[in-house]
Image (cartoon, rainbow, N blue to C red; front, side):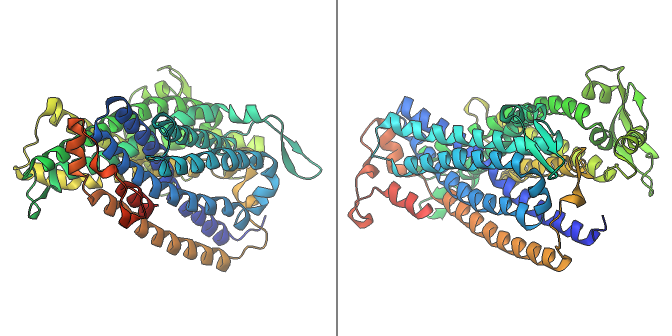
Length: 509
């Protein structure tokens, strides 16, 4: 087609930066919405004010994360017109309804009811107020399901017919588009990853505040040495949050593995080249082994060293240890005959190592959560006086980076191993570029977005740190545990008649 590869590379990098950055906040919003709803429900059912305080804390994290997700999501949709207008023109009839449903239904559903929940403290009836946050949580799931259907179409095009006269795809069935087998497998896998990431954040916050950042009468005290009963009550609340986060991380990590197995089998059917590249499997093999570690050759041919588990790849790909798994060489020949001459092999080393990074880092995060649950089982206190334990606890704030990295590597694998296709079997990536786009324009856009997103990252990080460093209201905690009226629920003239919680939420929002 004569497209300058530098333009293609820069535009792909720009889309990757925007997408990966946006996706860091999407699973967090999904998980934090569910966690807020769960904690709010616990407070509604038990009346224990520690759950109310934790609801407010997690709700503040949800507010700032949702806001950043909205901003980056809008930019994400602009990418279609900025760098990929040819793709948008060809598949607008397919993606238009999807983006409309996601934006007009799911997004406004989330934003509207999040506002009702946010402003509804002390104003809405308790049951109605609780319902608003559950609507937000459900809305995030609807949004994820709908938008994943768009990506599933790129992996496995369904529910369309090609109009040769105008060179565009026409949507034939919206339900069929939503029920794409790839979407049905990818959705639970994605949600499990979101639960894992959100749980890791709650574990990091709760454990840090429970065991490390302990408030005392003289300021920041030694780990595990609160000086008052109020500090003790606060520590128990953060300990509860940490265990909720640890269980979420453990359950989410387990479900990621189980749903990933299903997704892998589906992808083997619709994109066998992707799965062959993930294993650096060049030769079609019966009873194919799973490669744990391999070293390739400079030319990209068959690896000269590989540490394998016999038959495991056939089990993962098909469910049968003796099944035949297609190799890269045979698939290349098949695609060349089916689609015409060309190179249909993705970057094997990137597919291979991103796949393993996704699995390995995810397993590490799950193991950390399991270790924390074991160490704090049955209300046991951590031996924070030990140097090794103290150092480990001080590293826990970095825990959310593990599932975030695992999810990022997962998307890198998903998208790069589909190459050279934009929509598999229909349109190559270079054919979707905007006509007339220059390398300078693409580079300027990339730099602008990277700078803007860097600023947003700093703002989000500062807000999150500000939120998690705030103490739970110890007086309210103690009163709530005794069943007394919450003293902080009274309006304050200094805040315009709002309760302190309302004023704090307004500032955060």
